[in-house]
Length: 139
Image (cartoon, rainbow, N blue to C red; front, side, top):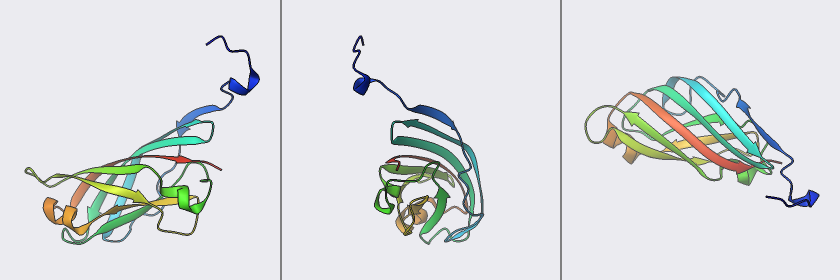
């Protein structure tokens, strides 16, 4: 932009892949795998995305799972900021749903996805694909 002030220069940009899988199971999930785990970091702002394929134990219960963050969050409260999980399960008009990213632990290197029972009831499926996307501030 023609600005020569050093304070206005972009000095930290990074993008890449990382290992998002934290466990092979979670609350109401008997097995899962993660694919396509990407991040972009501009300054301290980190945006990540990945895909989860899971086997759901019960299609009528709430579901949650833990995943790794590519960079440590600024604090444990910020580890779950600004995220959504869109999922595709089952068939018919109710097969699409949404969950939310939240910080269900005291740490700042992991975060959680939570899908309420009402969303699970609507889809009625035991196998699902979920796309997760979130933004948070790194330490």
